[in-house]
Image (cartoon, rainbow, N blue to C red):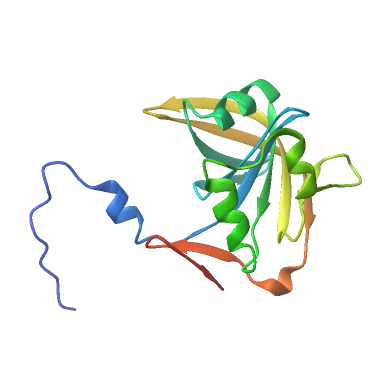
Length: 166
């Protein structure tokens, strides 16, 4: 086995340029009620444990999504299909719909939770723990319901600043 040589580490590591090399799934987080409802695109999320079922999502500390998710005490995560790149861009934009405008994108599940139309899957979560770190807040969500959508569409991925379907 041949060992590679690596240049000296920069004085300040450029985490963003390194993390762009790691492909991630793309989801939309929804939190709140009525006029105080927000949806935002996220790709910093992971499964933490299956017992109890728990996921982690990271939100910018001073964002509206952080404020509303904190107040609501829960959130829904809809995993985007390969056909939902437009949704990812919409909910990542500054002009994203909020409040009752979101009703045209989200349906209601039998358990009363909301599901993004066309999503691969949706998790309904209750916030169990938060942790402030730098300019972000990590939300650990206990999964209270899981819904499968149409998985034939493939998943939407984010890699090197671009979205792709697999």
